[in-house]
Image (cartoon, rainbow, N blue to C red; front, side, top):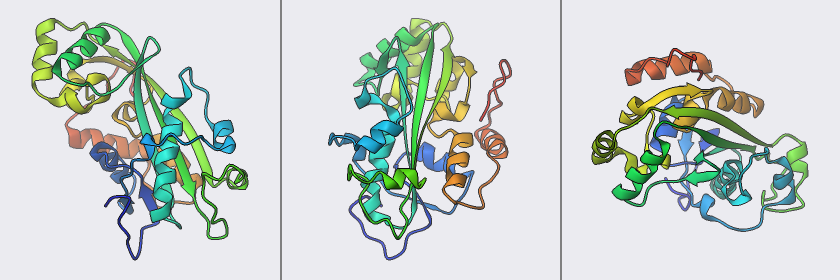
Amino acid sequence: MNGGEVRATLPTLILASASPRRRELLSYLTTNFECISTDGEEHTTPLPQAVLEALPPVPLPLETHPSQLAWRKVNAACADAPESVIIGVDTIVVLDGDVLGKPRDTAHAQAMLTRLSGRTHTVYTGLAVFQKLSEARQSLDDPHNIAALHQGQLQLALESTQVAIAELTASEIANYVATGEPLDKAGSYGIQGLGGRLVREVIGSYTCVVGMPLVMVHRMLTAAGVRGLADPHEAYQRWLSDQGKEPLPCPPTFP
């Protein structure tokens, strides 16, 4: 379903994302949700002052702040889900202050992986959860709608995780790029796939790197009134088992 389609009924929880990885991870917490894909992160309208004030601090330009990008996804989905709890998520890979997005082509992917080789980078995942109550019908992009924030209807959060990549040879990088996996991944690697073999250490939330930090999502959705969620630690273990993976032992990897 995309942002232009209309449904007669919608479930209580909406994931404002088309990412199959996020949809899969959220399904380990609950199966009672629907996905709405929007182009919200491409919007460049000025942020409401209330949203600016609520953004978690991060040493990056505002336009790349993953929490504001997550908010834009949520805001764009509001029209199709007026009475739902909506969650938006955005993930970026940062090295030396530079945001490493999806590669343009195989040469760009090889250059990114060469740069990441043998080094530790940061993955930031920003989250926005909004519950639009029936008595508060204003749009979130109304700069005067500060009451929604004060009533706890909008939550913004940011998770960060350190990822250490092993020393990679040129042939290892070329062989991985040849699989095609890096071409639609921020930073040119997918930790949940073959790219997991390149990772030496994860310090923090493993699922933050995949794109949906389960513990923080559980906390925010619970605060928004969503019930019946699975325990995030148990959900993480089930997801790892279904992926045929084991948690990295040292340091221990968290959900």
